Length: 249
Image 1 (cartoon, one colour):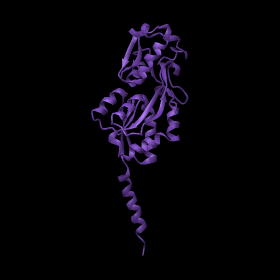
Image 2: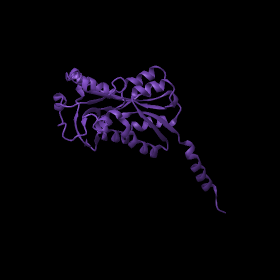
Image 3: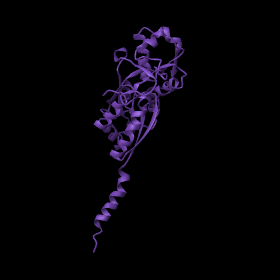
């Protein structure tokens, strides 16, 4: 007689696998949109869990999380917001770590506007300079710090246009509503070079480091998918993807 036990065991395992998979809802800083979209399928393939992402400004996510937004994990554009949430009891103690260090870039959709230096910024021959809201987006704050360090903030104040997130700021420049804009390098960098337009990569010395921290939130404390994603972000596989978008680790 045919032994049915192996078949029954196989059917049990197939039926059980989906039950072991969980979903992790992640609040993702807008600058990290492209990297997390590249990471998500690899994470899901490796773990069986599902990643559901929402994108926006870190400051806005802070307010949403404090008001009960159903996120399991925060991938912030700074290190201060996760630290604050952890200290306020909204995050899992000890789960916070720096998953990426961002780079600021002055970018134009026109390939001839920037020559790899700050010359065009200093010349001021443009109508609009886009930055992200410095109160909500760390890249916007870094842009203001850069202008101050260069002694240009007062001279260019009247030309600044603010996006509510770094995504909107990028759109202002991509659609030529602003000739120049300070955006995240990850938004315009592919395969080791600027993908389109022209740019000046801002030296790190001109602004505070953009350390981007991850934190498991209180809602995700018992979610194995949240812990799995945090572990995956520390892996060599994730590091390679993150660095391919111009971040440091």
